[in-house]
Length: 488
Image (cartoon, rainbow, N blue to C red; front, side):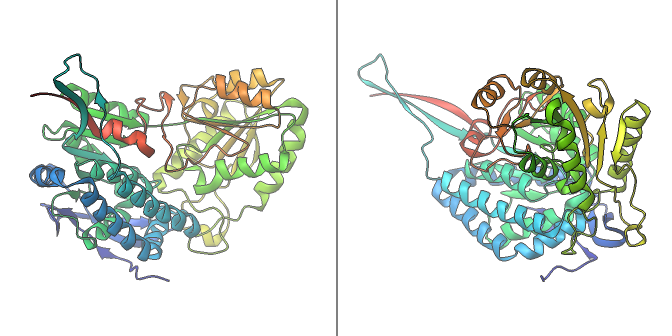
């Protein structure tokens, strides 16, 4: 299928060269579908390695920002072409390293290609406005300037798309980048960096440092020469990153958790709603920040919807993501599996009723993987842990209501506000949902997961630091406005 090879050793990418961690230490990246398979060995870097990467990015910043947007865009176009050519190899690395099915991994990789091409085009867009001056002999206008060195801290659940949708706008607007990927998907990150290297990106413009978040992520957030941090991950870690960056007066962008609701109205197309709920909640093993978690159903159709949902859940086939027969892969790590199982137990302990799943599969062929059955609860109250806390696994909580108004109120009863959707044919219900739902992304007759790359993405409440990623909105974070006044 591809040129991907197991058990290779990968290095950091600093100043245009592949270099070992200063300590020489590495650690294995394990296939979550088979704990006995080593996907590759990745650096266990320290602060010294991070400092070298930041120094390289800082040294490259001046020449990189002096290129025209079109010149920077050409490098992104070339990287997109390389990534497209190597899409199967990168997608296989992703599937073997974090478990999502190969078709999902291939789709994500091609999304990375599209993001690169989109931001390559952004290099030709305007970067300012002319503003009337009260002085008739003066010209006043704005332009945008890069922040400088940007640190990218990326999660393991989208190891191609998220690093690219952070790095690509950072680069096109003239910044240099130090990428700290999740250690669980560092092999995939190295494959992506190989594409930029092959595209001829100048040395130091994009650097990769692999290591523990507590070491590399913290040092990146605290580094005096890093002018901005863009982070996607858990709320707990995000708050620490934000506090560290704020303390030294740099810029930060946090995209964090979600507890995303879908509302099923009495007039909904139930087959479509079931399809969207399963896709939104269970694809990628529920390991998406926009994954459906709470399913809020008008009581008139609750039983009919539940019956259809459980029938479809029963059909889901678990297995290795490289198998064409698998619909859902494993949790990305043993730690994530334990977290999901602990929440399933909490749900039962707190009085929710288990309708489906709830355990590891008993199949011998899945015994060495971090698999958990797709799980459905009912009798879920809004105060329960499974209704309030992000699980990041294939767990759905069914919650009946008597009206759309009650549904929206329940949907908003959360510390999070990332995404939400409603299935209805009623225009009034759609408009009420759009107006009253406290979420950064609202979707009508579509699943909660997913956003188009040209559209702004980000959350409300505890889901975000309230900036937006992707689309033209990305320029707001990765640049600063400079006002220019010229008088002859």
